[in-house]
Length: 122
Length: 106
Image (tube, rainbow over all chains, first blue to last red):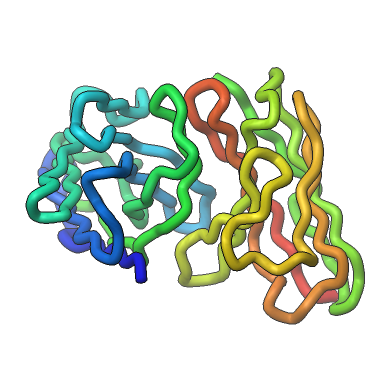
């Protein structure tokens, strides 16, 4: 069974940093593109970042470029999101999602974790 | 950036009725469109990809159609568990989501 389990969310002050993790199991992690998608409270879905299976290709939404860094460790079946210079508008549930039917770095998302809440507030 | 506009924002129907949800793209996305279902407190679930292909385990009452700029998700006969928020997403040019349609019980 495919499982994605996020961790690392919490309350952080504006300008602060946080590192999210996603532990994957039940599939060959090193064969799949992985992604972060977020959802602000009561709002819709927003793609944040993607990383290819071998980390060769990395993409960011303009809203987080230069502040967030995606990475992965295929030996540990883990995905990460380092978030720096956090802003109030980064407050959201952050989902880890597996890429499906990808092309040119753009994917659908066939499995999602349960999400981890990041709250940026003073 | 391709903008996806979903309509209606809210759809009120009864179990057993047919639901038709729309997603319109600001420019052609060919058939590179997916639909997701999200229930409160849960992660989204992939229903349809490439406009008309059902994802693994998705019941046959869910179907997708369209190409270019106009897409439709149809639920042929609503079950109680189908009341949720539905999002479309394109992967033709970068990746964007629609703002969602809330399907509520009438």
